[in-house]
Image (cartoon, rainbow, N blue to C red; front, side, top):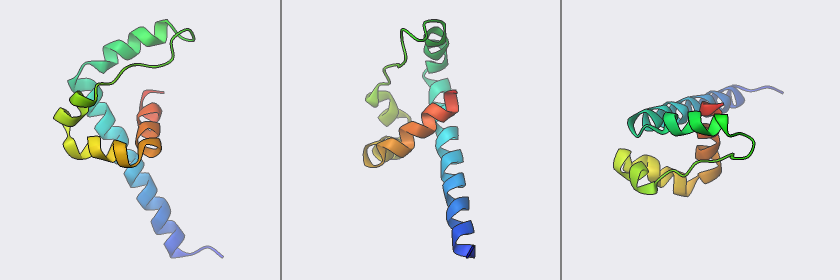
Length: 84
């Protein structure tokens, strides 16, 4: 049986994902990571990742940096979805 509670949970997940993707976008813009991501694209598949400074994350938004430590899979996954 489908319930309103499931709707609410799905909506919360969508809002969280959207918020995380927007935060990553702002972070990538502020610290010019899009330039590095563009370079990475031209070297794919030999290179598949970039180094993101935790100090930059903490300076950008301390709460966001802590959220990465507390929920790394969810937060990093949102960043990956943002750049795909």
